[in-house]
Image (cartoon, rainbow, N blue to C red):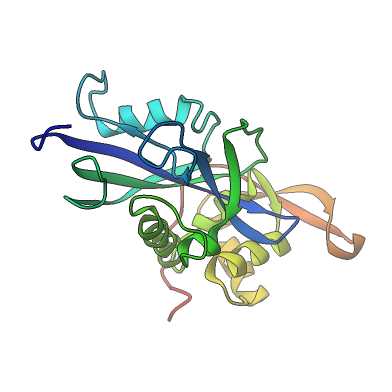
Length: 230
């Protein structure tokens, strides 16, 4: 590429709650092309040049529908943009990066895999470009937004129990959360029309049946008047 070349990409951090291991996972793709061919990296697409996208949202949807992702997302939001002359060995480049959540187990391609989020965010698993820094920034957005919103519930799908809600908040915030605090939040969500009791029960830990709640506003999050940090 010439010195005047420039690349702008959309990069996506897709998070998934693995119930078996009790941890958050991050979707990575094995790169086919240079630079860093064969390395695991965030799924992304180039948006400058001869592309048909009319907006960043169009580019995000193109990426989501491609084989780099290829499944529905429960949530996505733009987190930030980075750029400089050093992050890509080819030329000056920048990236607009996003947080995304998938609620259900999905079938992955041979070039895709889930990796422990903490290992990537902390740099124990090295990624090309500045992808480790991007992942750390997106993890921080997830944590900070989860202090005052219902965002962690996006990991649980359309129906879940109160104990499952307590668990996912504890996992996302990386510390134990009181059951009473979560029940108060679930009550607020019910009063606001975001949840309702199903009258059904599901097997929980220890084999005990747990009452479930269903989501009435899929794809929407609620902002509480108090933060877990208060």
